[in-house]
Length: 229
Image (cartoon, rainbow, N blue to C red):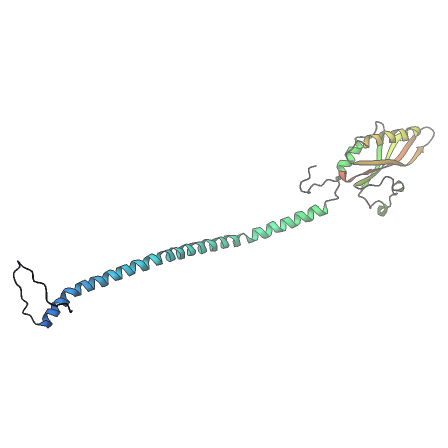
């Protein structure tokens, strides 16, 4: 059964009858509905804008942070490039230091060594000759080789001539000098190369040649890292 399209009757109210044509009544309804539709459209736009803003804000913030990081990275690269000359200089200094250490790794301070040996010369005797050499340079300099290799030098060698008044005192003074030099740092061994007496019957002088060998401990190592001398 179809429902009736009649409006329900309300008792107690003043009867109202619209005498306007159907078209005008539709226009009135349209005029009342249009503001609501416009308001709904505006609200929909506001909601859509809010949703877009909420979704775009993290992207905008991330882009701004990315731009700041890129600017900072560029500034750091610029600063690093300004230190290129200093880095090249430091590299050159490092190379020179390495070369210096390699060149001086066999260096011996012979002046200091000579002074230490002179301090051990017995009273009354004196040195009339002294020569120093690194290992492997004696034969090329015309010096006599070490005694059958029994006293080979690995750090340095010293050859000297000791002059002592009195022919019989030469070997005694040489033994005393040998004992004194044996106390020096790096001493390996020593021996008498030759001894002879010079002069006449009234005045004689004994000249004794000695050879001392020293180990690597005698090296200065002035520029070696981690080495204290």
